[in-house]
Length: 189
Image 1: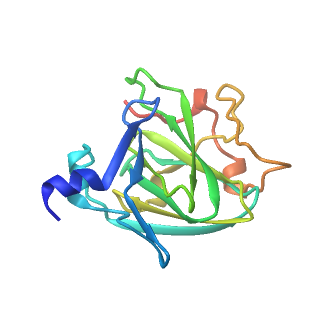
Image 2: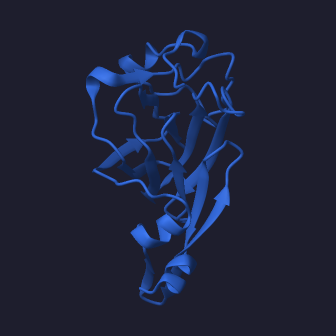
């Protein structure tokens, strides 16, 4: 693919938080189905995403499952998130003390239907809630998973007041139920 066509492969929409990008890949559809490039190194670099991805993750979750808010304080990860099937509300929280959007959050609906992706740079906590019957979430990470450095921000922190858009009670892991409040969390400088 030439550089000119790489730039046209993905449209970037700046999020409300510094560095966050909502990405819309070019989709080619016909009676057989569709085709899209979910990742193109050249196109991403032209959008300012020059990080190297070292790990791909795939999770499948049921309606009302809430995962997060996760981050790694050392060996931090940038994440490129998309949904292959179903729909989620993807949430990023800015944990960079020096950022103008520190302590703010943004939520973006990602689905197999809208084919949007979300670029979450290093310095953010990440989580999502499943709003369809099931959802297959795929994300690329810029660093390897490091359990010793993983932290969890409380999904229900009253200072953040995130609207997870769930119907009924969320299904949350024991680890995620023990998340730290923002005021007590390990943060990025």
